[in-house]
Length: 590
Figure 1 (cartoon, rainbow, N blue to C red):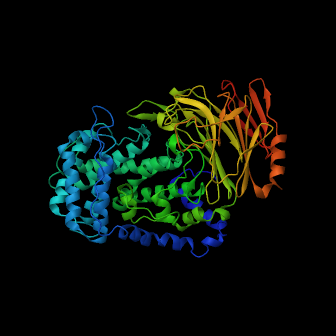
Figure 2 (tube, rainbow, N blue to C red):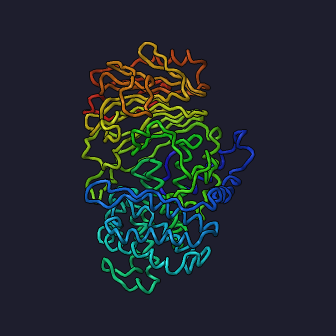
């Protein structure tokens, strides 16, 4: 299964998928995909009603993250808009809801430095404008729940934000094709969402419609940002989706504004937003097992490297996992009329019916600059590859061994690779260099993969990387056993093996200050630049654990100088230049 080249091709993918997604697991047979999607409304209602009648609980206002910056009040604002959303949805505590929004807006008016702090204001501002659209004096849902006085006040800090930001970020498409990215990718989307939505509202309000900013009237800004957004969506569909590759937290933050384009944009904007949302959830669905995300990723912080990924969307759209509490971050999705196609729910839920397949995507990453990042879309630089089996998903972002300066930092930061397994405990094996600060490393590894076989190596072009490690979750995997220098583990439905090609390894014993990295289940390479081989195979493809071990041990790495040649347990030949200087990694099928 490969990534579609245009938004329109998602429709073709959906129709094709419906032909082969036919077998439901017994536990899922009680509900059709259509029924699962239709259950969204009830799940939303359950989330809001679980908090009915509870008083406002303000999150703490935190001091600046760095000297000279505004206060860090993102959590505070999320608590305020989350409370207001619940009150408006349930039709309760209207006075308190309005008061919360007034208090939140007044905070920013009293602390203007907070308005343009990148980690606070634009994270929630588009939710405030959603309230105006749905509950304001001309609201489409329940007009008048948001009072005229509140509506007037809550636009004031947004106007202050727009006045400053619109001079820095422009809706240019001809030269950049929307690949000039300001701040970082999720920030960029939040910025233009606020600029678009304010212009949409301002163009029809007497106090704003005739005010020029950036030498344009609000109506002109609205048209320009609408056109920009359509190109933005088309470009992401054509060129591998997001730079912050399948990063659940950052991608969901980017996507939360897209719901506003879907619900409140004109026909062309709504269509583009709907297609992008469909495509995003289809991409996610094909590389997850029970809501746990697999495949190569970026911007996955070290403390989360072994965590199971989860989000409110898993529960809302597909009924996966547990009911979430209302959070300001998720308000747009909760109140949106968007629903994914039933076939996307089928892809997400019917893991067995999906069968076995490969995913190839070419996300962007090469580029230069900052404020904005300027992406080199002629080369791209990444082949994001995953091999998906009902019992496991293994993946990595394959790149050439390029120096750090060739990449945008949002692409190289905390890249992730490894395998996730099916089963109750969601076992996983992660192969990454540890960040020196236990938080962030850049351009830390390169790799090659074919089917369930992966070779990786720490890069000398890194920034902030320490030891090369292989982390095995303690839950979901058998106790690791070592035979002839190879470490073997067993899961519910698969076998896995890890081989350090040279220099050997030691088991970690309380060496990292991270409680999430398991002691005695983490391998530390003695030679930090030694290549590591990971082999994973479904139990259905081999007679026994002993037979799997024998196959792995028979597949000997062959070093020709610094060139590693390896025939995998699947019979494919992988070639890997451990010097990182002469040859790009190759994979060929026998």
